[in-house]
Length: 207
Image 1: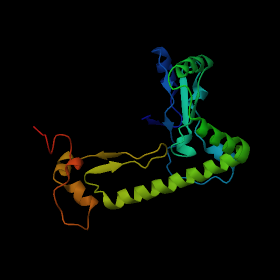
Image 2 (image 1 turned 180 degrees about the horizontal axis):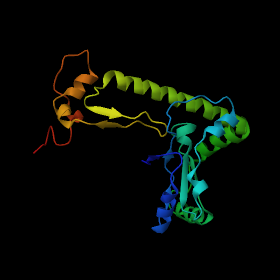
Image 3 (image 1 turned 90 degrees about the vertical axis):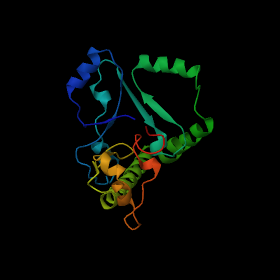
């Protein structure tokens, strides 16, 4: 999974990548403030977007990978790559002898929707909706974490980008003692945590 980085990465990152002759896949970027205000139109939406790593690229080292599965329809299995002409040419040659092409059915649906039905304005309106929807789901998840997970054994940061949330378990011993499991089920009698909730060194097969 790509890391999440600050919205304005330092120039030292670019110089480091160049000095070691390294290709950089663009990571998720997020603002320092996780609070979100729904844009009212495409102009406002564009103004809130984080600058792409492509704007810093002068050596043709950045590959940006976008997936329609995340913003259009799960399972559509379509995406697109933005990179230098030399890298795109090499990728085309690789695709010709491996995966060849995405599903024609998926391509037809995406083309009809984006090019002939929605257009640019319709696509932007959809992005505004889906961004608001994902933010609502994130907030629900964060409230559930705050309510049910014990602060004594874990911590987390409210995400401002990406497609998931990460929690840091701060007390392995408390997990072994069942504190996390009891926190997840406050209304039920405490019992031993299931094996799948235990660290790898605990439970079946432990030495």
